[in-house]
Each structure stands twice: as structure tokens, then as C-alpha cells.
Length: 220
Ligand code: AMP
Image (cartoon, protein in one colour):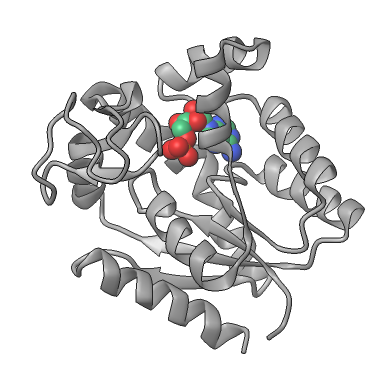
């Protein structure tokens, strides 16, 4: 199979984290989630975390130079052969920076998987989303018999609602997505790198199988 990177693109709540887990298992690529890296920095209280926290709590994007810096540093440190980017790039400036750093570390060209989800579904998913503080597993009140404060069925850790999954923050995150991230769809389509996958209306397993199949189809 041809060597390639994968970029997961889509609105907040499109299922990037969930599909990333499946793809990483299936394809054995290295997973880079800027959201996870930033949340870890916030939890540790590092200088980066303190800088990022204000933006994240407001539902805004963290400034490009900060995010590009952490991705670049991670790629230079771990020198992976193939990467699955989850939540990065989110702006045209980040997409351009990624191209440069990919060349610098010898990463292959990326296939961009655009997860298509309607606005109503996004709001329903985000407002019901719960996450484990310890293992990062994602659940939803709509499907899983869980509430914030419950024990994680996977590892026993505490399940919580992310601060940025509150209704007013969800609205701001959707605006940020529309204004800053959506232009990337046309950017990657024009370059022949985009694969569009409908990502709602079925079970998570079936949707994940669809995403994996779409990736394999393009690159087998
Ligand atoms: P996520 O877990 O991918 O939904 O990211 C959660 C939050 O982290 C976002 O709402 C942003 O505030 C921040 N964030 C994550 N990735 C990026 C990125 N590539 N550029 C800017 N901000 C980001």
C-alpha cells in the first residue's frame, strides 16, 4: 500500500477522535491530536497550557504559531513514518505550515478525509458528549448509559463533560469552524487530496468501517 498521511477534517463533533482511534488501529499510523496535546498541557499547567486555556474555554482557536509550534516540535522529536492528524490543520496558515514541516521531516503527502455531518447532528453530539479524564475514551449520553461523574466503563476513570462542550461555547466553536477551517475543504479539493465521507445516520462501527474503506479505496 502506498505511504501517506491522513488528515481528519470536519466540524467539532464530526467524530474525528472516534474515527482516529479506528484508523490508528487499522493502519498503524501515529496519532497526533492537537486538541489532546493542548488539553494535556492545560491539565499539567505548563506555560503552553496557560496560554491555550483562555482560547479553548472561549471556544476560539488557539493562535496558529502556538499550534504549529507544538506540531512541529512533536514531528521533529518522534520522526514518524506516517501520521494521522486529528484536529490539525484548522486554518489555511496551518495547512501551509504543515506542508513545509512535512517536507522537512520527510513525511508523505496527505489524504484528507472530510467527515460530513449536519449542524443539528453536531449540536446534539457535542451537548451529549462525555469523556474519560484518564483514558480519553469518548461516550455520549444519547447512546451510553452514562452521566458526568460516572466511572469510565473502559478504565474506571472519571467521566466528565468538557468545558468547551457547553451550549454557548459550542456555538462559538461552530463559528470558528465556519470562518477559519471550512476554507480548507476547497483548498484540499482543488489539490485532489480530499475524500468526502458522510459521517452520520449509522452506528459508530459502520461509520468507522466506511471511513476506513474510503481511505483504503484511495490508496490500495
Ligand atoms: P478538539 O479536541 O480538536 O475539538 O480541540 C479542542 C480545542 O482545542 C479547540 O476548540 C481549539 O480551541 C483548540 N485546538 C485544537 N486543535 C487546534 C488547532 N489545530 N488550531 C487551533 N486551535 C486548536
